[in-house]
Length: 356
Image (cartoon, rainbow, N blue to C red; front, side, top):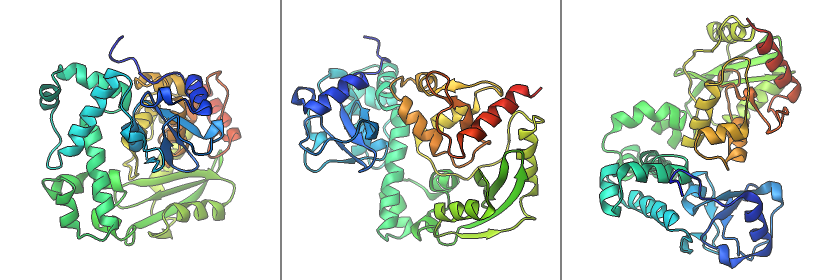
């Protein structure tokens, strides 16, 4: 079988195995439950979730990377991989996890596992959706966040997580943490966010930014509702309205809405996983006036079974219009859910279709 072919069984087969608690498929995949944040083996004796709440992953590490926790009852990570290729991917995961001082190179991983680095990269990405290096970066960031939340000093947490120096982390901190490590350690206290609300062809438009870039763009009917949502997203930050501070950002977004600019080229300050960034990059590559299905986006990422995860990444996009999640549609072309209302999604696509 081609190395880049996803190894996860089809979702219908996975769901039947979950309903039947089929122990024969333990190790072939794990299922995660959105409402609980936990992933399990197919044979787990726990109560079955509703179908809409279930997600399927080829290996436990992929579920963890997506933010789910291992079930303490069925211990899915202890199940042996049913497919030798899955076992290879899990061995790469363990090698990266065990290397706390630096992320192993592809050459080192290939030598350790007796495989071609290029083949290993393709096989790993087919299952995990990210490269071994991206997986390692996500692990380091997770260790750092955990240490900071537990009250460790920033320097101690930084080096304990495997960062060799502080400079590279601080360069990446705005994108990964949404703030500096010191601010993150305080639950976001000290982060300053200015916002304004303006009229737009699609209702009220809220734009918010830190000193590093735009962190929120949202649409609605009420200034008060938009402000409440922003404060809910950043409960520990210092949030203030400043209608005079974001004029150029608002103008750039309105020009884009009017068709005068094909893209909105503004610096961003948003937090996201590696997979979310991959999805958002694909959204930004969709030409104005065109759409792609969630399945097409998943396929372009080498994960054709990840359409639901793509939809979730679209739903969690904090900067609408800048990252055009409205250009993602259902498999039949239907306008599925949109955080700011399907009517606005329809209006956006109609405006883009008429744009010169």
